[in-house]
Length: 398
Ligand SMILES: Cc1cc2nc3c(=O)[nH]c(=O)nc-3n(C[C@H](O)[C@H](O)[C@H](O)COP(=O)(O)O)c2cc1C
Image (cartoon, rainbow, N blue to C red; front, side):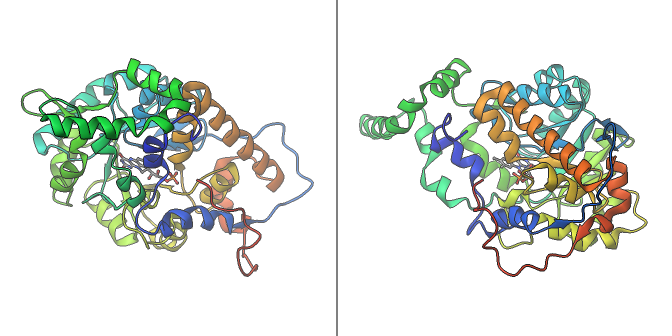
C-alpha cells in the first residue's frame, strides 16, 4: 500500500492516536500470546464457518468499518464488499465512506453491515438508516468511541485537508499559496502516478455520499472533524436508532471497553458488541483490545450478546487466539485497507487468502477442527507467556 499510495493519503490509514501506544499494544498483545499445540492429529478439512447475529460467515472475520477507503482505490468500499462476499463473509461500511450504500450492497454476495455515525444530526442519520435498510444491509453498527476525533498528529502535520482544498473562491495570494502547497506534493505523487490517475478518474477527492443534508447535498470531505464532534452518540440515542433500524434487526455496539458498557448495551436492546479501541486511533493509553477481551469476557457469563472484537489482528494465529475467548468473529481494519490500497480486488483477495491459509495451518498444527471447537475449548488452547522482555518479537510495522 505504501508503495502505491502517497504518504499524505496512506498515513491516514497507518496512524494511531497520540503516542500510538495503544495502536502498537494491539499488535504486541497478540504477538505475546501463546498457544498449546496438540500433536499427531489429522483432519481431512477444517471448518472455519461461524454464525454471528444469526448470519452464517464462512470465515470468522469480517471487514471492519474503515472510513475514506475510496481514497485508496476507485470505489474501494464496493471492491471490499465484493471480496468479502466471495469469501462468504461480511463487509461493514463506514458512514464516512465515499461509495454509495446501494453500490456496496449490490457488489456483495454476502451480508453487508452499516456502521453509523450521527454526522449531520438525527435527520441525516435517519436518511442513512432508511437507505441501508432498503439496500438490504443486514446489521447496524453503532460506534460509541468517537465523541471527538482522536489526535493523529503525524497525519495532521501533513495538512491533508489544506492540500485537498479547492481553488474556488480564493484571492490571488491564497491561490498561489495553495498552488505551491499542491506542487510540493510532487515528489510523493510522481512515483505513484497510477494511484493519482486512478484517483482522478474516480472523481478525485471523495464526498461522503451517504451523509445527505436537508437540501440533498453530500457532506464534503473537509467537514469530518467538526461533524464528528457535533454528532457524538449517547445512550439516549439508542432508542430512536433502534426504532428506525427495526426492533428485530441486529444492532451492534462498537468501541466497547468494559463489561459495564456491554451490559448497558444489552439492556438497551443491542444484539452484539465489538470490543474495540478503534485500532488505537481514539483514546490512547487504553488497553490493547485483546486485553480488554481477556479481562471483560469472563464477566459476561449469561449474556445473550454475540461478541466480536477488532484491533491488532495481522495474521491467522491472531484470529485463532481471539476466538479462544469465546468470540464469534473478529474485525479486520488495517489489513483490509492495506490489501485494497496495494491492489484493489486482487490486493484484498490476496490479504484474505493469506489470512485463510494462516488460520487453516494454525488450526491443523494446534489440532482443532472447527471455529466452534476453538470457542468451546478456549483457555485450554492458550498458554501463559513466561518470556520476559520483547527482544524476540518482530518490530512493529503496521
Ligand atoms: C483508516 C481507518 C479508518 C477507520 N474508520 C472507522 C470508521 O469510520 N468507523 C468505525 O467505526 N471505525 C473506524 N475505524 C476503526 C476500525 O473499524 C477498527 O476498529 C480498527 O481498524 C481495528 O484495528 P486494526 O486496524 O488493527 O485491525 C477505522 C480504522 C482505520 C485504520
